[in-house]
Amino acid sequence: MMLFLKVLRLLGVVSLIINSFSQKQLLVLSWWNRESELSSKDAIICDGAVRSGKTFCMALSFIIWSFYQFADNDFALCGKTIRSLRRNMITPVLPLLKSLGFDCVERVSENKLTVSFNGRINRFYLFGGKDESSASLIQGMTLSGVLFDEVALMPRSFVEQALARCSVDGSKFWFNCNPEFPEHWFFKEWIQKCDDKNALYLHFTMDDNPSLTSEVKKRYESLYSGVFYERFIKGRWVAVYGAVYPFMDNPDMYCDVPSGDFEKFAVSCDYGTVNPASFGLWGLKNNVWFRIDEYYFNSRTEGFQKTDEEHYECLCSLVGDRVISQIVVDPSAASFIEVIRRHNRFKVTPAKNSVVDGIRRVSQVLKDGSVKICRNCKDIRKEFSLYRWDGRKALDQPVKENDHAMDDLRYFVTTVIDGGSHFFAFAAERLEDF
Image (cartoon, rainbow, N blue to C red; front, top):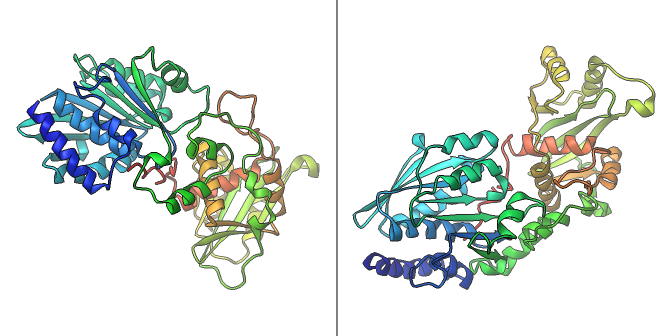
């Protein structure tokens, strides 16, 4: 109890450092207290909008709870990747813990965080749950608690394996996430069944984060549209529907090709022989990437197919005498990538091909104006008007039609702009919650 009293005093200092906590954040910070009517819960689930204050207060609460309940025990901190976990959770919370008297030693090579306080010590192991094979990484451990940051991005097998490791009496499960599609296994099995799971469920909005000004809220609201607005601003588990980029119906989203010199050029390619081939030529000017020209060839409408070499000649015609910093190509187009490499004129990179995360990222850069489409690029403009979500699918998935310029645009954003590593976006975007 003496430790908990000191923790309460520390929380008073924390509230001064971060202005103040909202009532929902305070509940996250205190639900496990033995004097709380919620202390008998086995788990806590926090979902909702981006920038709503979930992640930071949950990380802080998880570590404080571990010292309130245990000593010399092992815990797991899980993210989609260890890199995103460090960025979103570990890096923000460590300076605050240290300023409050916690001694924190992170061994990056071991993916291990050792924390001590008032003579007690606990160990926190970092895990990435990016695919089905990740479940094997956590097998064999005995844990006193586990925290999942962005659990909706992790495979069910990994999550259930981690939960099975929590066999110590008094262990608890901690989950946070932004919403995904309503058929998602976590929504069906945990959120809709939170009472059966004996879990505390808290839904967050940006209003639950007192550190956000109204100007910051408006800025985040402007970054999303359609289903992503419903999920990441409203915090709703909704199905995809309608146009993928509905805001591109606005003529003001297009511009003329800027005059003057460009700082850099790049090309993005969605390659096809039977299916259409779409290449976009991009120029960088004043921190904005403009799609200044394009090549689009549909063998079905033209009545004949082109060879890899013929498509390469068209690529060279599109580029002209410009110096190209990078060409990114559909990673499945191995033969075309090899042709580009063999000619030894351009640097070619297989594109990152994460569809839904890529679409979300494309939406952001189009809406914030860091990527602009020039009016002369008629084929991509046509596809913007036709590109739709496939409402017949349980998973988020666009219809595989009228998507070739859409794909080359996505390759450009995720590989040239983001350097081949994402967001989030879902993630830099995930530097969110406090």
